[in-house]
Image (tube, rainbow, N blue to C red; front, side):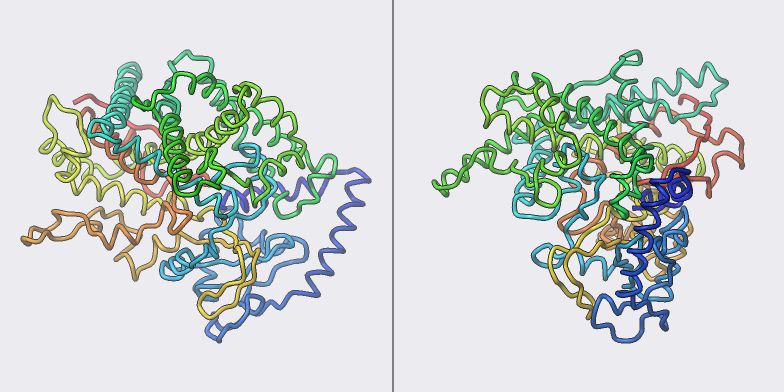
Length: 586
């Protein structure tokens, strides 16, 4: 969500200053219409911190905004910080306006949990954003609205990931571990090689980008990219262009009429182009993959999705003969329930009719299943790539910025993992509580996802004695939960030990604190909890173990670079700006 409001601030000026008669005419008309609607419906109350009893969403306290823009200019480029300050004044529930849309802001771990644990998925929806309708032909599971078919689809995808990480036999988990170990060691080899050529000082970002991509690509599609592979550079180009276009196009989510206005709709059109290019790239990776599918040899997530869907379909057929069980768990209603209709409405007919021609359409049932598997794989691929890449670059940053914790990591990993072994979850995770605590503390201290992807109320509901109507955008301030002094003592301090507790025999810091781990909601909570959170956590564990075993990571300029705090960029995740570290092989 932070990328939404950041881009609004950056682009709003240029959008409204285009010197064309048609643009000025449209702006004048819609400005007057929206201002009139706001004057009619607004009940902004700058109250005493939300202490008064609130009975309806429209009566919630709200900071005053300005017509047409609402509060967007006040949020600035660090909305999570502004919302955290406003929560101190208005309480755990308050209302803001972005454009002409009312948004419910939910703050505080207990309140967020209450919202996400509501029966019937009251807060588990997704807003019908125009940009969301362009992703995966409008069938992205990440942005699809909550429904029975979405629940089945997620259950199938979750089962597929479990198959990949744990398998039907003890050997399956080793596939994921071997993949992560191989990519981690490849990253370290390249870092050491580059460091030897540059007086041991490197920018780790390009290497982390490629190896993070390879890790997720191997997981999803069973393939990796070499240094000179043209597909690697094609994807990086698409990814960077897509991220930029996604930011620029965010105003259309709050002022939907923009997409119909020449000049103003240019960022939206660019996003449409890059979304098609991204989808085509994913389809190319899937091409012919299922032709070699073998249920007795599951190679990657694609195979596991196929296996999980087939298994669930057979089970459904056996329990309900009247049920149309073709791809039972892979059915999708699309963003807010309209399947590919959204993409068609947005001019993506070529996307739907053209790109998926690459898949086998000989059998309509098999063809639809291939497409839906591709949608889910595209979700896992895109989300996993961004999350792993961001977590890895922060891992290297914190090892350099806090060398005393790096030493503790190394001592623990060296004691647990033999010199001729690769770290594994089964043999070594229980022996390395500090390593796991360190990873959790990095994610907390960075607040890697400060504002969770926006939610949406699916029906009229109640929260904290407040009646909330359906179709309300909901922002969950995860950042505030990482800085809440009631949850974390001295929250600004980097202290991995906060995730440790005494063992049953009284040994201090010898096991993870379940309570502390549960207080970290970086992967979300409830029905919308990140599908691959366990997989991401396990991959990160293997990368960290390999990094400290094989090399020393130090500041490139002692006491200067990198240090915390460090400049960051805001998007769906928080990333550090460019920094350099000193790498030496052990």
